[in-house]
Image (cartoon, rainbow, N blue to C red; front, side, top):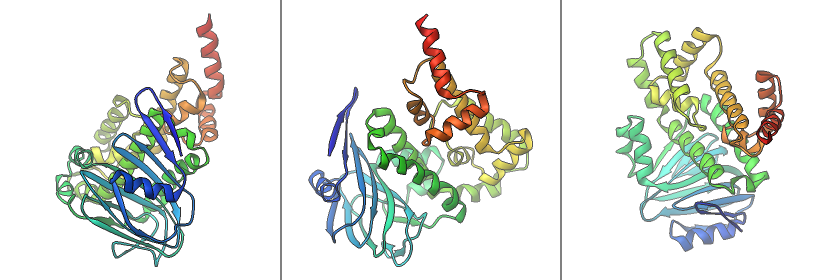
Length: 323
């Protein structure tokens, strides 16, 4: 276990599964009622009133119940039957939440890989209300398990899995306020978006007209006016109350590129501004800040767009600042 004290708070990292379980019990945040020996790599990050856990384990049966005013939310990055959660089959991409006082029963016969966050209930309520999903907020007192569409399994899961593979290889990446907040916000918002996306698409079917030009302008305003490094296509669709398919058609019709490419180029442009203004000390910090978990791929995208590597931009900026 390691503790890193930052300017604002202390962030702890635990990499031993038994210690993780003991830590849960000691804090009475998540009570592990019973579990068999767990096998596999695990990480738990704790900061203030939130936590992030990555579990890669098998041969486990657990019963957990949150106390106080916390909720747990999770997404399974890899799993298949006969694994189950609260009596429902546990397959790759399944998302869930559990409110205080509700027992969550998980059976993992075969190895499974998952991410879990714990967060105050009020935070989840605010995220749902911001998305106009008061009906979902009304379901917060019950355990919710959802099997997302295949598109989510093919797009969202690999993105989270890639980020957490980097974190597992280099746990020190989360040893700062900013990095922890980014990983936490990205994971939490992705889970919320995945849970709420079916309702958004249903609403979109009834409300959205085919005025692609108008949709594109709203998309452009959203991207350009919100200084948010964890902005994702799912989150934009949620805020705009349209489906991913509608947004893709509108953006491609207007500028000839996909929403993902447009958003990536915007993030690259903002990261270049940070490097030029020396707001990031290293290329890795800048890449993580703007949502690029793979620094090598970030450098490749950057060079393709600007004709030079980000390290060159940073070096030039330091030289200019010295004079």
